[in-house]
Structures are given as structure tokens and as C-alpha cells.
Amino acid sequence: MPDYRYILARAATGEVLHWNLPLTEVEFGPEKSGPGSLSATLSPTLAPAMSDMLDDAGDVVILVERNSHLLWGGLLWRAAPQGTKLPVEAAGFTSYLHRRFDLHGNLGGRGPYVEADPCQVIRDVWAYAQEQPDGDLGVVVDDTKSRAKAGTAKDPFTTSKTDPRNLGEIVDEMADIDDGLEWTETVTWRGRRAERRIVLGAPRLGRPREDLTFTTGANVTGEPQVIKDADSYAQWVIGLGAGEGKKRKVVVDGARDGRLRLEHKLETSEKDESKLRRRARRERLARQVLPTLTELEITDHPAAPIEALRVGDDVRIRLHEPHTAYDGWNRILGWTVRPGEGETPERVTLKLERTIKPEEGDDTEEL
Image: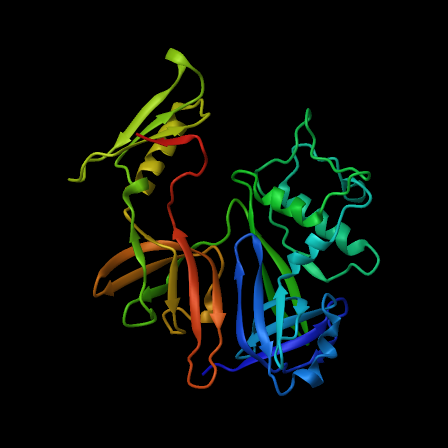
């Protein structure tokens, strides 16, 4: 069984307060464009002795180490006694920004932003937060650049001193810009200090992982729930471009597959017909997939070691269950780890979406 260790350290200095915090009922994991979370319980017999150390909620971090490799880290926010037990809750480092505000306006003079890279705005948010007195978490943000833009000459992205914006909400707004960026968090040992990093991906995190596979009989456990829902299925997509009437571009992309014909209308603002055709084809390929897999329970295995998982990566999944056959590529949105205890083995649940999925938004319509 893997060797887990839970480490408690000061948020600002990184000073380790306890190298082996006795936690049970642990569940933790990262996520795409979110801080991830941890919940656990301090062992009942040790809760009274340790509760004083956990009185510093909001000022300490919990690090999760698996076989000497850091998997997760975040701020302890809550320790609420329940009888003899002491449940604790923590969230990734970006949760800190949701407890901070832009008190100076325009992130201390870094804005207003006109056609700015949202990746840079996120770096500026962290720089502003950490330059304030007692605000330095030691978080490092990647130097990734995107092609997206935040703010225009007519409508700059700006914040006001008289109406302080929440810093976490600014990060969320940057990540919501179309074709902009995604982010996640990682922690890595640098000597005896855990480096806290925000990983940016533009326009997305991850890459296809030919080196990782998940297969029935190898590293897939439990009972995979493959959903076959035809509500979003279509073999024919009608792509509508910008404009009205006869000037509007209309393209149709379809393929006969022996099934009853289903159609989907894709509203866009595309002016270029070739781009419209590409979008219509991509939408058709995404909608011509019937099975959907949103979660998968796995075990550690040479085909896909737990330490090799990365948020945003695309992986191949092959299922040959009694009532399910599935072979396709899915994207990892995050995962939840439940370390083994006693006779209970370690459990990891991947959170998934299709590698190629339909476009989102209210401008699409089934016919």
C-alpha cells in the first residue's frame, strides 16, 4: 500500500509544524480552473492534543505526500469538532484570493487593461496580492502566454478603489474568456520547501497521453457508468455564420451512419466560410458520439501511475464490462484520491469529459 504523509506548515513562511499529521478519512484532489479541496478527520485519540495546532486555520497549509512525492497542497480553512472527532477542511492556494480584494484599484496601478493577455492579468493578481503586507504565500505563476484579450479601447478591463473587486473573482473572469486559458495548481519539493505553483494552459491545459491507458482488467475498478444519451446526438450539423438573410453563410456537415437522421443547428458569428465549415465539422464529430463517461474509478498501475496524472491531459479508456463496451479518448478534469486505510485499498476517481465535446452556449439548437 502506498505510504501517505500529511504535513502541516506555516502559510507564509513554509515552516513545517508537523511532518506526519495523523489524519484519517482523507479525500483530496485537484481540478481544472479551480483550487481543488481536501477533507479529513484528525484521529479521535489525538484530536485533543493536536487541536491547538489546528487553531491556526487560515494561517497554515496541509501538504499531501504519497511515496515521497507531493500530490496536493492547500490552506486549512476549517476545523470543527464533532464529539471526539475533529473534521478538517482545506482548499488549494487560489482559495486564498477569494478572501482578498483589490484595495488600490487596477491591481495597484497595473491596469486598466486594454487587449491584455488574461494570463498576464492573473499574474498581476497574484503579484498584487502577495506584495501587500502579510500577503505573500510564495505562489509562483507560470509565464504562459495566450492569444486571448481582456478589455478593449472602448471598454477597458478596470477595477475601482471605491468598489474593491474580489481577487479570486478576477481570476475566474479571466479563465472564462473564450479560447483564453485554463489553470490548475501543483506542489513540488524544492529541498525542504514545497514550491506552490499555478500552472497556466493556453488555450487549454494538458496534451494527449499515449503513455497512459485505462483498461478493464488492468487499472479500472468499480462499475463504470457509461451513459448513452441521444439528447445531444446528431450526424448532421447546420452551421450558421454572421449576418442575416441572403448574406448569411450556411454550411451543412453530415455523415450517414445507419441510424435515424438527427440534426443540430449551430449559431455562430463567423464571417469566414472556411472557419464556419471547420466548426460545423468539429461539432458534428463531437455530437456523433453516443456514449459519455464522466467518472472512472482506477487503481495505481504501471499503465498509468497516480503520480503521472495531469489535469487537462487526454487519455484513452477501454472498457469491456458485462453490460458496457467503450473505447475512446477522454480529458481529465481532475480527480479525487482516497488513501487506503486498514483493509480498504487506495481509491482514485477520475473526473472526465469527452476529448471532443459539443460547443457550449445558448446559441445552439436541436432540430
